[in-house]
Length: 260
Image (cartoon, rainbow, N blue to C red; front, side):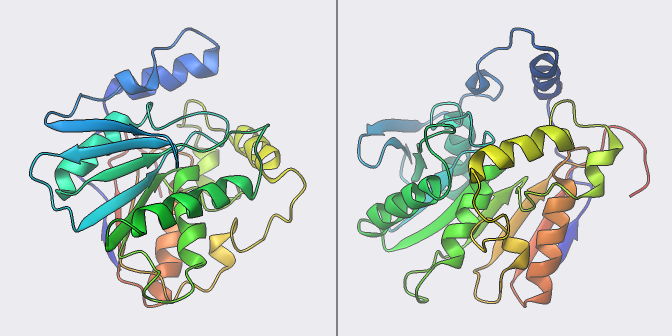
């Protein structure tokens, strides 16, 4: 396992101000305005499965990424994450399908996972090589999908997991540091309860830290040094490494000094 704990890529202050405003109940700008607009991306709306097809000019059309947005299962969309996933398309040089899925409370487990599987089958029918990407609960859905692959031919070629939410019990010590402006342990546990809607908390599709990870593809895990989900990312990377998976863990610099 490769770990880069102090990347020279700091989170813009606008993101922290955004979540501080959310926590305070104030007015906040739309999520999609937090990131810079990617240049050279053609976005096309797809109806079934619902989402945005984000295509870079001159991209490799023999591969693609299925990108699953975060938002605690109660918010977010392909639109809120279009800039983020557009930059991913530019960096990877391949199209990205940013999918939409139903939100809590109208949709609960396993509905979102089934919709992700539907989008993955749709994309694989059109592109021979597909990787999965996701942030927060989107990373959990990507992991749940990858763990259900029936064989190597059906498995994703790679995983890119940003701030992966891997422990719905929110047991990580990073919740205790008090540096995340919004995602406290109580908030995250409430989001998990709403998503599970009474389902077993340690179903392997919702508890990847309990799963057999040996057959997962090469995986990049990224997390911020101050965020509540830091320990979720570290625990996942450690488990992947112990399982023999080719994994890299990138941890962004913390904005405050504390022991880890």
